Image (cartoon, rainbow, N blue to C red; front, side):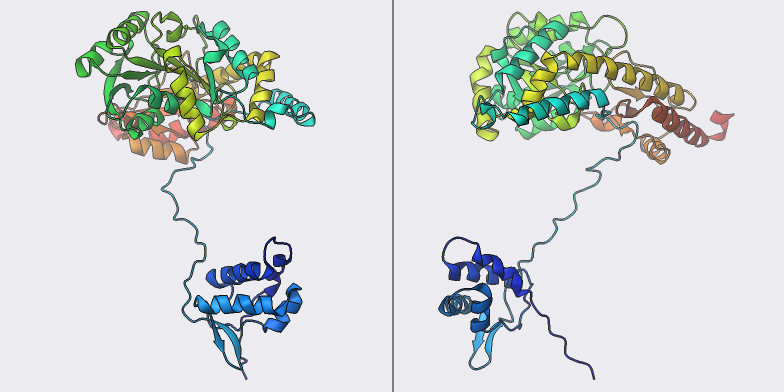
Length: 475
Ligand SMILES: Cc1ncc(COP(=O)(O)O)c(C=O)c1O
């Protein structure tokens, strides 16, 4: 004979009410209600007799009775004379549900070619571990109190020194704001210099996250074409002469890789001065220069104080560190500090302390030298592998990514799909256009993996892509 199965709730989960502060009956009521709402005690289930529960929970019986009565009054429980208390048949179900999955691909596959990847450098991680351990062994007072919204003075000084010597940026440590990556720096600057509805120029194509920030803040974004000299200032002047700001990547245009010529830099600064506009200079990957003299930052040749310089350790170190910075002209410093403090009181003192020592003790410079060497080898391996197939790519002399051009017969989306099947990740250049879908191509990174991984993935992708060629083209 089949026995009727009863679901026995685990009443032991109620036991923590012993440790909870406040009235015991109230804690018991809350615990029972949670169990009923999330379905651990199903509708119709019988609650244990108040006497038994009181003994188990080590509390007075009348406190249990009071909890049952409150549950009954609110409709969670029905008391049947002589039979006991039962979970009501129609209580609301509030079981926590997993949120709906986000549209893919939120987490991109960890394949060679993915943009923004870094490699774990054992020497640097060793030093960081030692610096963090040293700090945590004798925690400084800075960890225990709120501090300057711009970040720790030691890190701001280290960043200022680094930017003066490597990028010719004109900077006092008081102008430096340490941020959660370049992303937060751009966000704060955008909100500091633009009101909703203001026009802002953006390079076209552009770094999609910068475009998203400008759009999200309710600005009217004005796409400005990029040619072989960088942002076309004359085109910007024609489209929106009175714009309030321009976002640009002068040292290494993202994604096209062009370095802005001196002529264009001077034109851009002249426009900013005349229009009273701000130039947001995103100098995200300037540490990676492989040939020719390093190009100084635009900020360093700006006499009018119209350039806001933004940088990051996401490329030079690794993106999970979440440390970037802005060098803020005096005119917007106060506003930017207030904006930062309002949403994100200050940066992490733990990461910042270790990073300040890492820079001051010369480890960053050594790290960048090693990373640059690795990236150059990875770039060469990628370019050599791509040369075996139909994509056309030249070795860039700066940065951590390249743009490969497609032959006329090869569709961008199809090429990306086939490359991914071969283990090479790429992003569509067309999707980085702001105004309209423009030139197609494959944006491929060359950091985060050893050269051999790039050689293998690019060779395999080339072979597979070559097989797609129409007969005539293949010959
Ligand atoms: C143009 C550009 N700016 C900034 C960043 C860095 O962003 P974050 O410092 O927020 O990681 C990237 C990273 O991909 C980038 O491509």
